[in-house]
Image 1: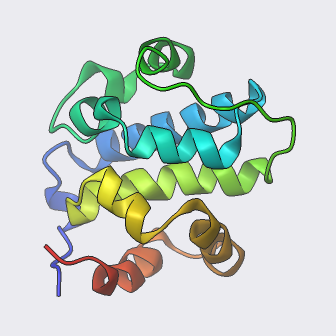
Image 2: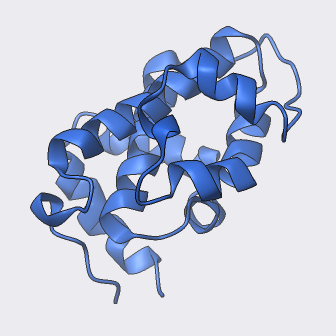
Length: 147
């Protein structure tokens, strides 16, 4: 079983880690508010080289940038489909936050996280765990990931 990294021992620090999670949740909201398809955008983002090299990195200036700035770089790599139908914004925001928190705590690449927990699965978890403590979610996810 994969070991959970102690939240107080994250290389970026807990406060910065929470800010990095917030950056990603705002990026996901930005995408749906600009009518990118939720499923397509999130899949392409999580599997992108940008996410792998900039957001999963130990340190990157992009981790604390605003969503519009990040999107301007990201769109050089991916071309998400358009859609005017979207999931609930709170669910998308939670999903963005939890994907990043999972990456920071379990040190698993975003691409692997998405392969294990695609958006539809995360939306199901949101219904059951959206109001729960983040540690409860991480403890449940620990068994899903193997090195």
